[in-house]
Length: 195
Image 1 (cartoon, rainbow, N blue to C red):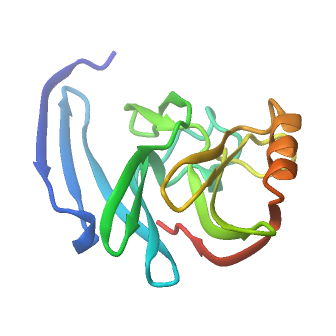
Image 2 (cartoon, rainbow, N blue to C red; image 1 turned 180 degrees about the vertical axis):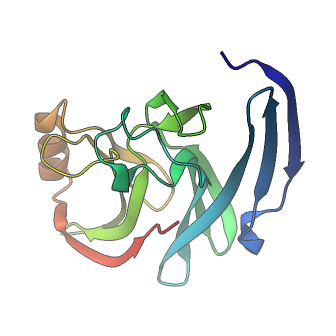
C-alpha cells in the first residue's frame, strides 16, 4: 500500500495572453516518485473583429488508467478544468465556468484526479435566421453513439442559450434550436482544442 510522504505544490502563474500556464506537483512516496504537470492551453474564436470567445483548458499530460476507461487512445491528456471568457473589443464582458460534470479517475501513476466528464474539444459560430451564436462542443473520453456529449450555445454577451448534455434531454435541445431558429450543423470558423 502506497503512503504519501510528501506533497509539494509549486505554482507558476501566467495568463492566457502568453499562452502558458504551469503548475507542477511533485508527489513522493516510499515506493515511487511521480511528477504531475498541469498546463494550460487557450483557444480563441473571433466574430467581426469586435466579439471573441476564449476557452482556457487546464490539463495534465498524465494518462488515465486504461482498465478504468473505455479506450486507451482517449485517455491522455487529461482535462482538469475549462472556462470561457467572452470579449468585446478585447475587454472582458463575462467569464463563465462551463458546467461540465466533474468525476474522479485514477491515472497510470496511481494518482486520483478530478477531471471533466465531457471536455470541450471544439468552438465555432452557428447561424440562425437573424443572429450568430457561439457553439461549444464537448465529448466523453470515447468514441461512438453511447458517448456523452456537451453542447453550449451562447450569444456574444456570454448569455446562455443552451448548456447541457443532450444525451439526457434531447427534446430540450431540439426546442431551443427551433425557438432560436439555429442550424447547429451550419458551423463556421471551427476551431479545435488540441493539447
